[in-house]
Length: 87
Image (cartoon, rainbow, N blue to C red; front, side, top):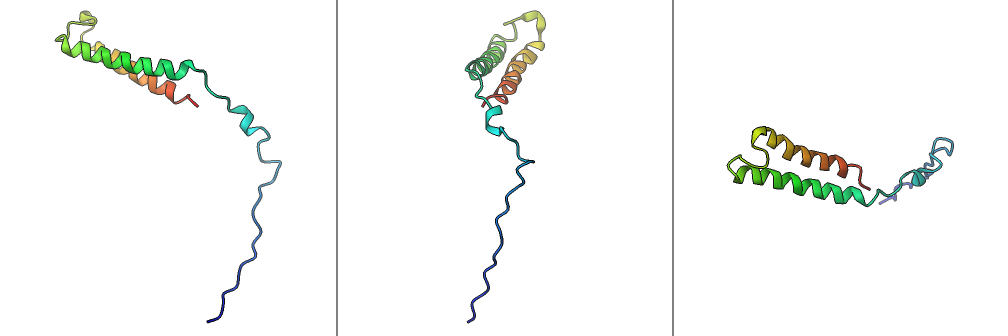
C-alpha cells in the first residue's frame, strides 16, 4: 500500500505587535483577606438562616420577618462575588 504524503505546514506564531507584552505581570495574587472573608460570609449566612428557622422565626431580628432570608442569602451571594476575584 502506498504511503500518504506528510504535510509540511509551518507552525503558526502570532505577530509580536499584537501579543500583550506583560500578560503575566498584570495578574497579581489576591490578598489573603479575600478567601478568609468569603468563607466567613458563607458561615455567617448559613448560621443566620439556620438560627432564623430553628428559632421559629423569632431570632436574629424578629421585626425583619422574611428580610432575615435576604440577609442570609445576601451574605452567601456576597461571598460568591468575593470568590470570583480570588486568584
